[in-house]
Length: 230
Image (cartoon, rainbow, N blue to C red; front, side, top):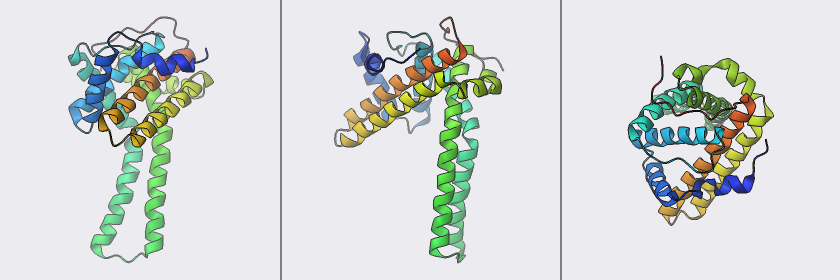
């Protein structure tokens, strides 16, 4: 089913509590360099994924922070596992360059720069490719409420090659880009910047949830899960 772009853009504000949601989400986004706020934010975005699967008209609230923290922690584990390789490549590249400088190894400026940029470019490409799959794992965990569902390769493979997911995924990415552009342009007003980023994240997560539901043929709205089985 096609995505209604106007509905998608309006979605984060389509609630009587939209100001509260935006304010809390903006604060968490601003503090997401810290572990707890970042985990809470990720837990909330899982709720938005579920809302997208159910095609809910209104964004969820921030009720039950303990569940947000728990699910955000599980989601963080899923993200770290999928992103381990890109992080390793980036760390190895930067670490190797720093080590060469500190030890006085002469590799030449141009070869050294090419190696650094090449390694970082590879890490970025891997992060995007695996990030595409990471979102599927997160959506499947949000639906099933089981950590193991985040690594169901059968589901990941089937959804990844389904246009019903790929198109909403692209919409979501474009929304994130737009949100960050707004944040950059209005960077002199920090509050507006973080609110724009959070707003875009909510709209994008809804689109990804809907794409996952369309690709997997979910008939019923997934129920929020408070625990996961090991």
